Image (tube, rainbow, N blue to C red; front, side, top):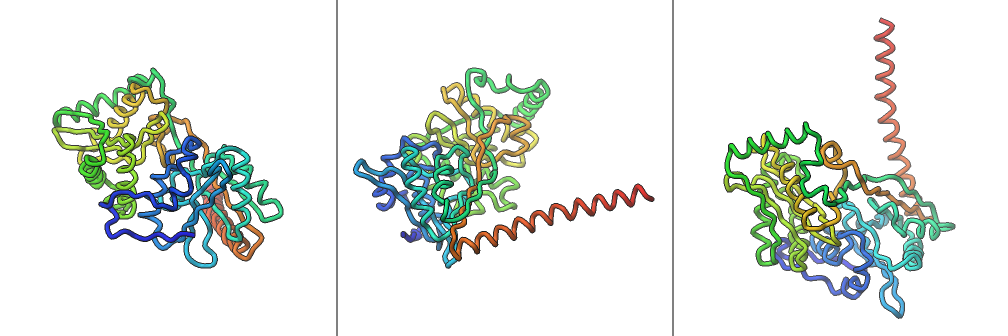
Length: 375
């Protein structure tokens, strides 16, 4: 078991991958990753910036040929703390264990099933080999529940996306042209995508954070400027990504001023979009959507095969850009232990509460309608 030590400066210290992650042999399984959130750099940045007073453990399966499977788990202090994947609660991005093959997944599942604490995976890919492996491993040891989680939208890129405007309806194309005209009336329009070196990264990152802070996200508390730990995480992770030439920071400028931004990485032949933001003072120009239009086309013309919108699907994405989604699931285990039974009782109580909250308003609405008709 490992405990994190919070650095004196979360934001400005250079990412140093902890020795305990190096010993796991993460690099041996790098080609087995299906998500950038499985990378050594991503997990290390999470541990260094967002673990807080939680407890972390690395579950690893090794053999003579090296590491076969591994996953970083953490839990809150106390006897009832559940194991969950590092980053599940902090970022709510999709995560998965790293496994070499089905046999390795089964070995890792057996190790996890031996835990007396319950385990939760908030957003697993629905085709994760860990799901059938854990289902088999939990037989006779406890219960397991798999339910739907928020899906991740994506665009499968090809030559048809070289000019994304042509993929939109005539009404949408007119909307974009009007928005672009309003932007040009306010000043010269420019789109720039940077592939920063680690030395160039900080200034560009600070500029992106400042753009996002000029939106509703600051008041809502979801902007990086309002969340020190999350801001520090992305600084560390994307600095490490810059060292591997993966980081992309994009801006839309109007009259020389940055009015929209993207924080993304190019990984495994795809563009993975983590953060977007725009200056609300320019909302009439739709800078967020204009920058999205530019980066989609840029990614397609660069030969990338996919545009992955991390996070979850929202109406503005499905209405305008894509209805394609990667399904995700929430997996929970309830071992036959005091901790497992406590977790089952807690989740069962929450399920009943949610059902009642949903049904009562519907019944009241139905009663009101009947009284209206009777009157």
